[in-house]
Image 1 (tube, helix red, strand yellow):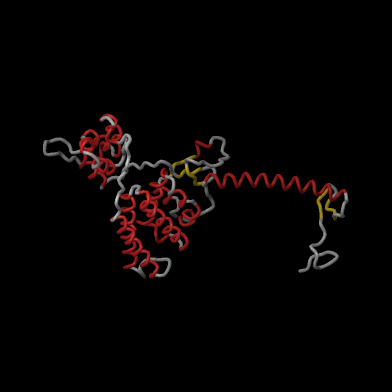
Image 2 (cartoon, helix red, strand yellow):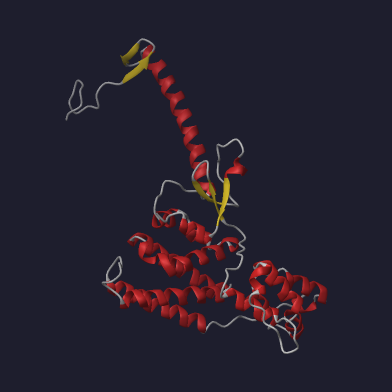
Length: 324
């Protein structure tokens, strides 16, 4: 449809809203000047609001407006989150839970994003050598799930070509081999080392661990740390932290000397009950704004008391939010 004006190829007349109604602008007319001032004021106000909105959007890592796990997984910036050591374990645990039960619920784009993030995690571990045990567990669960899905193709829903999934499984097996051959670099440091700390400080460090495997790993560094890591009181405190008294009373494991073997108790109870999870930074959900965001960055909540609306979201809770 051609524009209305003196020439059908022209953009038409320019109109400005005034107190007396809409008026056609004439060159160098008072109405044009007044209209330009009004438009400038409106544009400035709109630009200021947009800058404020964009500032919050770019600096809070918060997202809303999704209804499926795949959409949330795509829009929340997990790819950048793995670069933050406080969020790394949280993202890995979330990927592990998705691998166990929610892989087939992801869309094709979400699956592609999932494996891209997984690739970055593996490369980060290969470079930084940070927590390879956690990634090995994730890849083991993922490979087991993929083997079951590929064998039962036709019985379960797999988004994408079967050959793509076979290639993904081969890539996972390659990652597992790379992590198996990973050699930890020996740190060269002429200054103070962990072994130089007094015993009470080393013991205090061990008591701050919440994962039994971390205690065992640290105990393999030096004979002194091994002796401290075998302390019965240390493992008793760990059991009391993760499990209720009724729980470990049902699974008492006495040692040869008649004492309770708290170390074996801890790993035995893990098979029956979930342990408490600790993360440096977690996702939070605002019940007032219906927004997911990282605790460390926050979000521009409009509630009168924002703290009463916040709810921490564990990796399992994150998945449960999108179950219908």
